[in-house]
Length: 464
Image 1 (cartoon, rainbow, N blue to C red):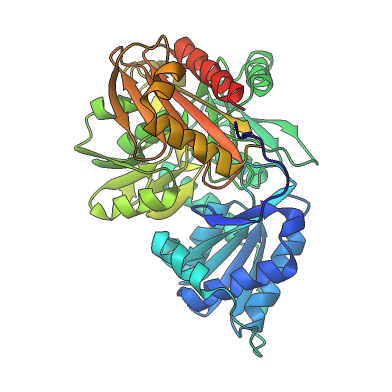
Image 2: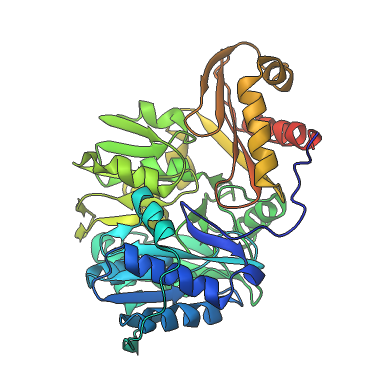
């Protein structure tokens, strides 16, 4: 049987989160090639903003991007270290494109590029156009470059102006800083919204925080911090800060697909776009329409073109606002890219406005609970072959799901998502942008959801 484990380095991949690969594979020539292809294939408004995360390799890759931009006669703005949504907010506000140097939540030996149009994230058609345009020759031009580090200030103002200085008054919130690109701005935002902020665990070494698959050791630390510092919540983000991590006052993580509908409802959305892997509890929360998509923000953005008071979110917590909403203190403009701060602030503000703790607010929702984790170091070809076998071979699937009872439905929108007569759901899916295989579960009991994920991680691992 083919091993599921990656046997060595693989070439950088380009997909729903842009370009990603091992740092050793992201050569200056490759970075320049993708940058020139982006400029040739996509609108950019004559200027490209460039930001980066706190990985050791990011500053040098950012300079390679800037050199390639200028070589094509296009102006560049060097924005420095900042959250991806802050970079997008700044560039879109200027009618410009942007490139973020980040590998998001994956380890520091990998990195990548995320591309933004003046209108927001690239979509699937843009991906195809960029790949087709690869091989563009370096131009003779010498575009200008300037430094602009004010994007963070505008990002802070976005939330302070919309929510107001008392929105989080009386709350004591821990900020797990690690190596998040938002670690400074997040503390500023929460403080200006009235919270007392407790900084936690800043790191000089890059920490690959995956908000959708938080490891047991980190969960223990979160609970310990809540108890030791008498916190109402701990908040954090992934490396480039487009995905949130939020706990209640006990240290229990509030999943991203719970933060999403809480945020959307607080802001008055009536239509939801979310991946097929998201918690089905949203279907019973009173929204006029819930649109299910494949996994990845480009698919969510495409579904959001339905218009109206539409919001999108992913189970990793990234939230997209598709209409001008009204916050407690002022308007909140649309932002068609994954954001981490809005789904941190809005549920906490909502709980406070309703006179509840965050835990009490979450407990009032339909009782559906999700869990997710991943196997790392898995060759994409092998994980794809495994998924195909489980999809096509009824006997193999029956053996894998022994003990789960009869199947009610098998959804192939993205991976294999099986709903059983009991109401339990197990979803198996190879990652589209990393050598990982993800397992999701949803049930009416949180402990069972965790057990199902652990069980099917072990079963998939045993197939190696």
